[in-house]
Image 1 (cartoon, rainbow, N blue to C red):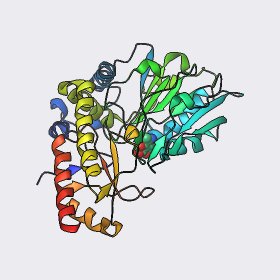
Image 2: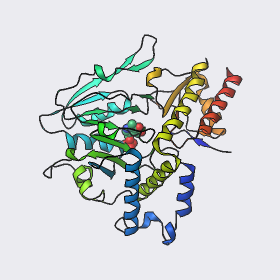
Image 3: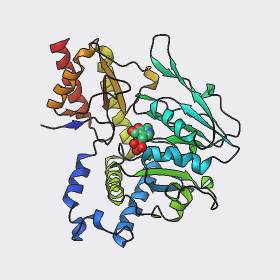
Amino acid sequence: MTTFNFCAGPAMLPVDVMAQAQHEFINWQQHGCSIMEMSHRSKSFIRVAAEAEQDLRDLLNIPTNYKVLFMHGGGRGQFSAVPLNLLKAGQTADYIVSGAWSTSAVEEAAKYGQLNVQNIRQTDANGSRSLIAPKDWQLTPNAAYVHCCPNETVDGIEFTALPDSQSPIVADLSSTILSRPIDVCRYGVIYAGAQKNIGPSGLTLAIVREDLLPTKESIIPSVLDYRLAAENDSMFNTPPSFAWYLAGLVFKWLKQQGGVTEMATRNQIKASFLYDYIDKSDFYSNDVDTAYRSWMNVPFFLADERLNDMFVDQSEAHGLLALKGHRMVGGMRASIYNAIPLEGVQTLVSFMQEFERVNG
Ligand code: PLP
């Protein structure tokens, strides 16, 4: 039976990548050991690391005045790293709240400085969950930065339009990076935990515009310091080397598939296929305004919640893994990142149809 893993993270990785990693697992390129057993200072690992960076730069068209940092600490590590690196005494940072993760980012950043928090969540007249458009955000003149989370993994809500702000935009792209092209120049900092569209957990990407690197005199903990990471090619301390290697395989896979433009086409088709079915059915529902529905994380609800456990058990028995919704939202959630093929979504919809036929 083919299985499809709809987990929100750590998430399914491309089958071809996993096969290559398995093949090389204990004897990487005939070195007689695994790459995870090799020094990060070895020529071989430095080559792997540099290639991964270059491939990512190619994929996202990252300008040369941006540093690409391979860090530790996950998305939550960046919730602290961002204010520590960018928010100076006496400054204010704007925080846009569109869901659970941007709320957590606020809670962390509030420890370090002055924030202007904007809740952009709203409910439409028809009861759908929606967002206030960027032109109506009340931003602080000369804010140190504007932090936002364009795709909220838990809530299944996303926005693509960015504000016209003079302040640098800092975006948590943990669950949407590499799902489509982005204009990196619009951002001051982009960060992402790897465990969705990039690779295994333990690795965190930060793409930082050079002029935003902190000064040498800062008292930022060294492992979160963007300048130290940049000056040491992300090897100030031992990097998550296996995760970095695997991310490199994913980047090569993405290039072979046609890059992020091709991913955008595929992701849009996958998401539409699932949402279209949900919208046509009276048995399932999704309550996000169609303009803000996430391409990556699709929460949905059964009309009869008493069937939830049966749905989860039976879907798992059919090889459709991890569909149980996040505890804060309930219902179900299908995370359909780059590695889930259209076939996975088609199989899910077939299962949902059959479940509806039997239980509806
Ligand atoms: N930001 C977003 C958008 C996420 O989806 C997550 C985790 O799922 C995080 C931040 C937190 O990431 P981590 O668990 O790597 O700290």
